[in-house]
Length: 210
Image 1 (cartoon, helix red, strand yellow):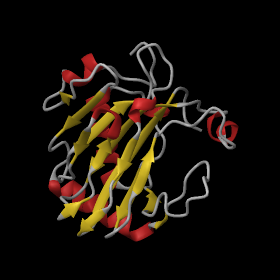
Image 2 (spheres, one colour; image 1 turned 90 degrees about the vertical axis):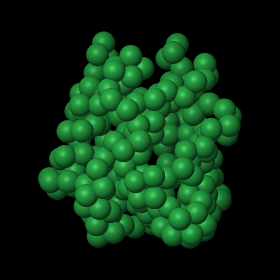
Image 3 (cartoon, rainbow, N blue to C red; image 1 turned 90 degrees about the horizontal axis):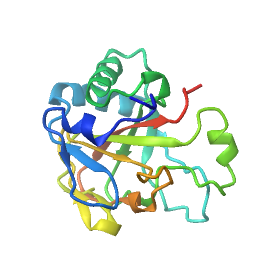
């Protein structure tokens, strides 16, 4: 890659099972069955072991904006190492540019209201989060289980919703082709109506993490 913190549509589409959402407004892809079910089950156990209430970078006064639980997964766990290896094979992004893998758990009624993954340049914590590794480039999100009802991820601007299915990956570039931040990546982790939803999220940065 010209930029080791990024991938490209051409690289992703060369990988088996990757599909692009047909929209000129953002680069958005999915890949059903990206992770095998046994690996998903191992990752779910890790999420359950260390989960805590989720937070957001810039508090907005809405205490119900993000109601899920979150955990940081140790890179020393064999399941996490296998996940990282599969992601590198898929996207070719230098692993040094990746944030630690996060896991999220959504119970009935929990959600993450419409948000973008990049850090707002005018946000109160922008310098804190971006001074070393820079802005987030790509997001890779993987559903670890199939939810009985609800829990979809909705990209409202383009009218596209992904439903949780075990092992399905969804990924997108947080920038436009000209390099500016892309507000069309606004997405909503919708409320779970029945069951529980488990998700893995991997973010990459402009510069090495650390």
